[in-house]
Image (tube, rainbow, N blue to C red; front, side, top):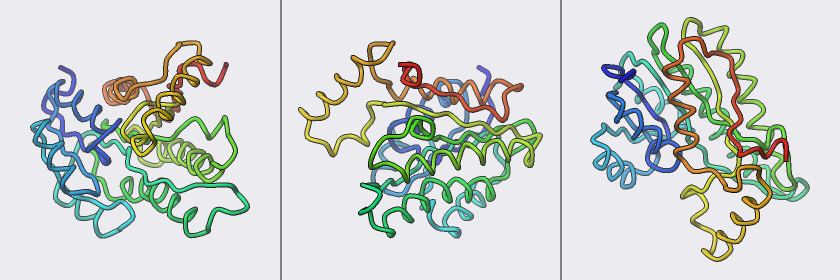
Length: 234
């Protein structure tokens, strides 16, 4: 158990990729702290995992600072939290695009600044393949993802010997899509899967496996890994 005795903080750990990462880290022996915005969902997730929970709003300096003051020194930090608002470039509101950057990019920036990560530990950011395979009505998300990938490379130098990497998922079937009507969601996922070399869309566990690899591989830093079912070559 490579993470036995290690302290892992997953920001965005109450659902989806973050929850899957927290569960895998816990199963591998880590002491896990999950942080997220919604207290009720956070407490339910923490109870199911046997993990600690600290309500945190990544858009707030004070909230993120309080999280890591409570945690103290840690070994690994993962950021999956993001509240995304997007739309057609010419009509999406500036309030929405600013909110996306505030949560997705500046949220990760705040976490990286506030966390006290032990030497040899790791910080893993979550981006997304729209940074290199853009699509209409999602320019702000692609831009935020690209900025995060650049940040990961920069911090790998500046925060060394802490290791900093980013995982870039493709289409993943997580609760973030639960707002879609079920028939529409299933149809969309089936169409995406049909165009991928893997023949299926991703699951939260697929991405979590790569995040744990970043935690436990002491030679991995400054890396961006695309886990997309082959979307970039399809």
